[in-house]
Image (cartoon, rainbow, N blue to C red; front, side, top):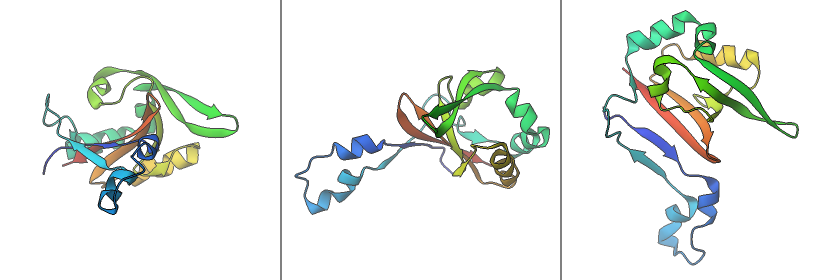
Length: 146
């Protein structure tokens, strides 16, 4: 199975596609998903199942000890949690300080109860996907679990 980092191109880019595109260019007008093979470490976006399960067993308190976050609210609308600091080996995960985490495996984490449901739902997952905003661009980082 090939290791991939999925990058979702921002909606603003979709709107910038040429208005004169022919009907055969419909994918270009809608945008696309680009798969990029990591060059520096082929296993960078793979989590070994034993390590993944051990992290889940440590619980969400352990995870919160690995990062510092601040809620991002614009007006009355929750936008996600900004990672202000990442400690230890998590710095190699692909996440960066300043990233705004919006969803995990497609599910919102706005409220503590939602986060706990997401955490429990991670058991047995084949992949871990985190939707973030980085430098005002939406990205989705996906790690395969093997």
